[in-house]
Image (cartoon, rainbow, N blue to C red; front, top):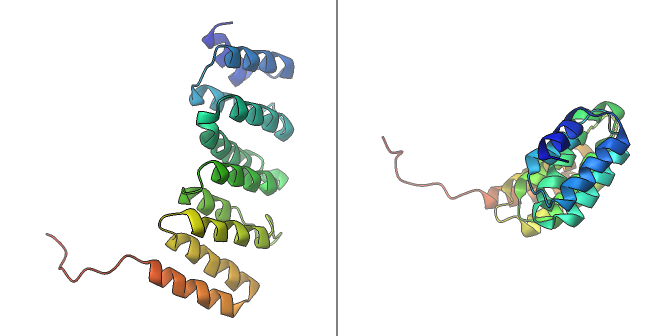
Length: 182
């Protein structure tokens, strides 16, 4: 099977077995092209369970792109399966991405953006714990503190809201006394 045939199947096939065969060939050929696998993840005929199957196997087999795979899957679930209230899978894949590269602030911020207050999904308590963990590993956690302020505001916890507001203020870059350059 050629790379063009694999690409065609990933993008257009609706038959799971045909897609799976192409996936197995891509792994056997040691294809590391994330753009190719993105076509697979965007195939609308695949269910969330099938996407998870492909993503998990790919992350195990090609560990050097695991962060990108998990992040991409999270965005796919966020964009294409949100109508199924599939925020849990979105959050789960952001957590997996953060486990691979815990210093990347964007992973935590994107997970926080998935919060649906009317449904409390993903559960606010899990998001808070996730963001707190991120403040320990992200080099510049100011934005994480700001999100924690928001979540504690939603919960009505004034004490924690004020605590994280102070942390955010302390984490802001120092103001320069120099006039702006012209």
